[in-house]
Amino acid sequence: MMRITFWGAAQTVTGSMHEVSVSGQRYLLDCGLYQGRRQDTFERNRNFPFPAKSVASVVLSHAHIDHSGNLPSLARGGYEGDIHATPATIDLCKSMLMDSAYLQEKDAEFLNKRNQRRRAVLQHNGNGPVEPLYSVADAERALGLFRARSYHEPAPVSEEVEFEYADAGHLLGSACVLLRVKSNGRTLRLLFSGDVGRPGLPIIRDPEPPPEADYLLLESTYGARLHKHDEVVLDKLRDTINRTAARGGRVIIPAFAVGRTQQIVYLLHQMCCGKGIPDIPIFVDSPLAINATEVYRAHPECFDAQTYSYIENHDDPFGFRRLRYVREASESKALNDLRGPMVVISASGMCEAGRILHHLRNNIEDPRNTVLIAGFQAEHTLGRKIVERRPEVPIFGEPVRLRSEVVTLQELSGHADQNELLQWIKPIAKRLKGIFLVHGEPVNQEGLKTAIQEHYDIPVTIPRRGDHFEL
Image (cartoon, rainbow, N blue to C red; front, side):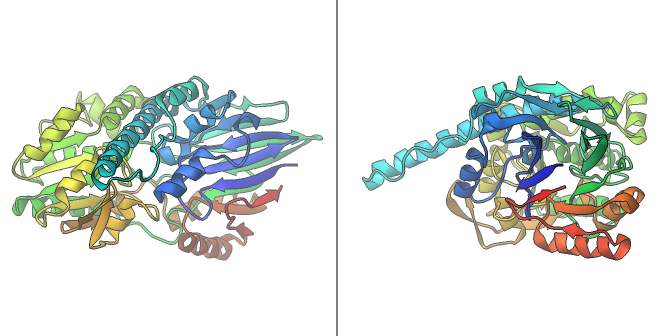
């Protein structure tokens, strides 16, 4: 018997964390950072619904921060077990978790200095000091617990439980997880999709067919939507850059440092080679994105055939003449003093932390500029407020007028749409006893639930946070 409890990414897309209990042992599928309103975010991420020390093992699907980003909090709480991940995921997490911890500390430092200035002017104590969610030392503790597991390698985590990875095609090193529980001569198989990628995405291989399972935890980010073709993406990106450059503006692209930034750089490389955009400078302003790009270069075994062809021709898919990677903070600040059109790609992808906040604060009040949103924006994030084109948006706690053009490029998403999800589960649909939809907002989950039941007549459940089920 297996008991599963949904603690994160339940009717939302952030904070992926699913608890599996077998014979009194607690296992976690993912331990992601919840993102949303600042106070809600801090409280939920800091306080686990169970003692951190009570977890036996963590199995990680991939490195994106909404799936891995709260591992330092788990280590902070005393967790000392294994964190299983693919080799590429481990290499990405080495940069991502350290960067997340650094940003937690720097953002707390910035807010405390600002609050101190306010207290001096207003002559009152105000709120207490802001604490970082976790520290660099906590991230280091978490990184020491990682254990590498390859695709299709059965990996035991106890006498009764083992798991196996298959390529999910969503991100370098991403995986779906098949959990096998053996008891009384029988085997119960739970498949966790992680985030399912899309066929034909730049750089990485397509998703593998899923392995046979009894129950499926399926992501539903775009469960009620259909993506447009890649040609539309290229045209939209090209037109946005050309239009903004013609009026002397900047294109500011908040992009996930891992995955999305590399995709955009790859597409810009293609356009520059084909002279599809003007000869303007392009900056990747994110130390994390720079580190992640080096990890991509170190794992060509995850690349698709087209990206391999770049390498075979001795061409770097992540480097070209107009492109400059910006690592130092002083160089990042200097971008504000430059004149003329340019493209700036910076993290974080949902505009919740990092250097992108400074670029937005300095640029979104100028109608010549464009903010190009290149991925899904969770509810209550700054990125969602920009997509909604609110007249004012809060940056560092201060209202800023949103006067720049806003363009969305969600067609570049690494998440499968409704049809792609239906095709992905098709090979195993006849054997499935039930599907639980996670990692999606209610409107997308309801749309996918209806489509699954129409196509395959499988019971579909949309769990809420804290819901649990016996399998």
